[in-house]
Amino acid sequence: MRSVTVFDCFCGFGGLSVGAQMAGLDVIGGVDANEAAVQAYARNFPDAHALHRDLLIDSPQGILRNAGIRRGDVDVLVGGPPCQPYSVNNHLRSTNDARCELVQRYLEFVSTLHPSWLLMENVPAFASIQRGKFLESLLRALRNRAYHVDFRIYDATRFGVPQKRRRLVILACSSRHKLMRVMKELDSHDSKIVTVGEAIGDLPEVPSSSDSYTRVPASDFQKTMRRGAQASVQGHAASQLGPKNLIRIGHVPSGGNWRNIPRRLLPSGMRRAKLTDHTTRYGRLHAGKPAFTLLTKCDPHWGCFVHPTQDRVITVREAARLQSIPDRIQFQGTLTDSYRLIGNAVPPLLAKGILETVK
Image (cartoon, rainbow, N blue to C red; front, side):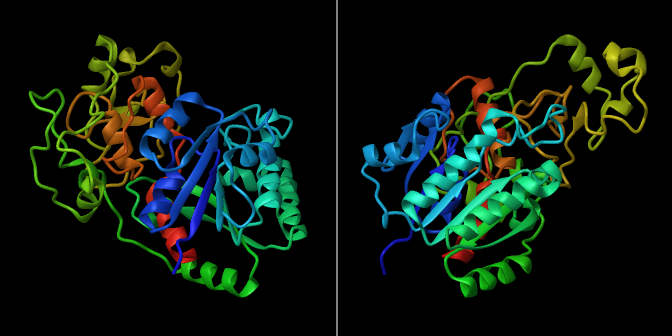
């Protein structure tokens, strides 16, 4: 049986592509406007096309033609357009944002390649912007291209990701029967919950005299993450905290947050906060629970990113683990670049669960 091929739009470092590989699919390429992301993609997918192109400028047809990718070469087209225009955390969210045009570019990839299956991922708020009209226009455009289409909002914990992360997933297929079968299977999919401790408990303490693994993997998740990895732990470094933040997080117990910090020690803007506000700011992860949603920077002022037992934020490698990114995937840019690539990624185990069912 020939391999099932995947092309990744807005690929970032390759979260969807990693999930596709874990599901046994053949990744033939990805495209992204971010140079650091494409460099990471090229490093981690040496046999695939790593295309550094801005889809707001370059046409999908030209990109594919130059790469030698034609209709019939791609079975599954995947993509997660930038979520910032749709996110409820963006107080200016609007379809007037130029990046919303990237959904149209995805449709141009569809028209050019006409793959059997489509997967698009985004934040749940994608479904509510313009009171749902934006999503409906996308679904209508896919139906007009002879696809049957459906969507769900999934919590990534259901797919073994050690992080509470809700994502909108749109699936389309040229066969109505196949789509219905896949949606039914995914609706009943429910993996064991993986906790922070099960995700990162085998990694060395920081700082350490050695960057080698010092503990044997103690959970199935750890075994999966270490499969194919080098002998040393790559990217196990964290942003440094200033003296004031170190004092603040010293007051926060496991599972606690800014409410545990004496008010006089809080930043001035937070001293006026109500106890119902900013529920995860200055949060310390709880080893016995999944993490909260990762952002593009692991800054305690913005969320729950403090290590369960050590007075520091999580490392790049720990952040990757909480996104279910295997240790073999390397991040070699700055800490800022690495945290951003990880925070923007689709959790590979979420992608794997969906694409395995599609396969």
